Length: 150
Image 1 (cartoon, rainbow, N blue to C red):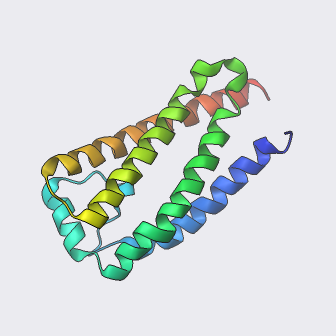
Image 2: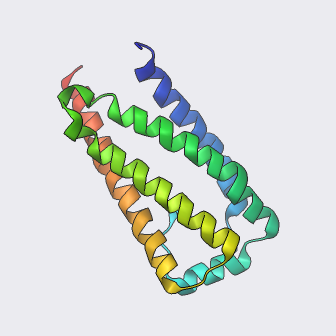
């Protein structure tokens, strides 16, 4: 248990590096993947039209698996420092994880079934924004806790 506070961030860093490497395969026409950028409906249509079958397969396969490892290890890395302060302090990290999981599910649906309505893009964009906002708050709380407990 004493190694977990060190192992989780190392796994998060390694999975982020691997994720970044694979993510370059899913840039289409210079556009980043849904995970990194909140799209408009027309922007999403442009991105999906430029996405090659190989890039789509990489997005649905290795990128989503690495994203799951990243969000799990990053969530653990953000929760462990604040856990002593009480469960409420873990909520931003849990919100980050939930938003990322829901975003991944919505993106997978769009990649496999196609884009059916503008609301799907709005939902993904909202989840992407929520994910990054919750991540920033969780990181600030974890950093504060680590600083106070040094």
